[in-house]
Length: 280
DNA sequence: AAGACAGTCAACCGCCTACTG
DNA sequence: CCAGTAGGCGGTTGACTGTCT
Image (cartoon, rainbow, N blue to C red):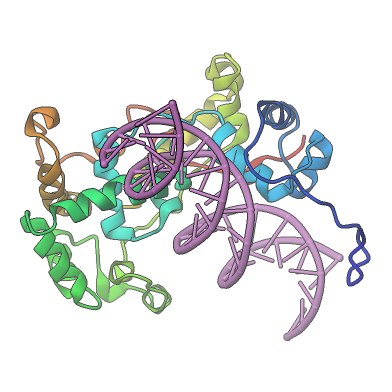
């Protein structure tokens, strides 16, 4: 069939669930060649899918390093914190959860955390606190609390561009010293999954840079902001988790390295950058 | 046993933005 | 500056699975 408007042949792409064979083709192709332009991947990999579908399948399922396991309490806690701050910015939240995708975080929020939140509404002080915070456009109470808790966060310094695009009240929060999210290059993580020692393939200077960038990334959200947020995340979590399961969880100040799990240096706190998948 | 219902999650859709010629 | 294209993102859908009656 030919599209009259553009004179290009219309390809009927396959839709629906991916078969193991399709997964294998896509995985093999990308690990061998990188993705380059996603629109050209299906044809080159011998798939009847469109580029977007391939990209999504790779990012959400095939990409090395994904966990595919249940969310831990710690991960749920981080999601709660970040959602309070960022709203439905699933990709940004997922950046702080190594091995998790935005789709996974979104689904988990919608199917688990949101319900838990609803469940404890009325039975926890958090509910009323959250409501009172959210009910005020611009969230002055939250802003005030954050101001009191951190001199790194200055609302008065918020660029207008940030304020004007706020889908949630919290979007107006400007975190000072916001460093750009560091990227992991394809070449950096690929060896981890091919069974090779990363140190053999990554130059010393690259690894040093990676570490430095990790540190930078920890400033995306200031420790103090997270400390503040811990106050009502604690209430939330304790509202639905059995104390025995939650097991003596101490909600005092935690270094950001701990919050974001920097013990896992390979991924933690780093943004996997898919843009760098370029054909050699 | 089987149908109804609810929950979960992979995948799609459509919008937006960035990039390129 | 503009149009076309590709990629990224969040919302939504629908297939599949488990549980209930």
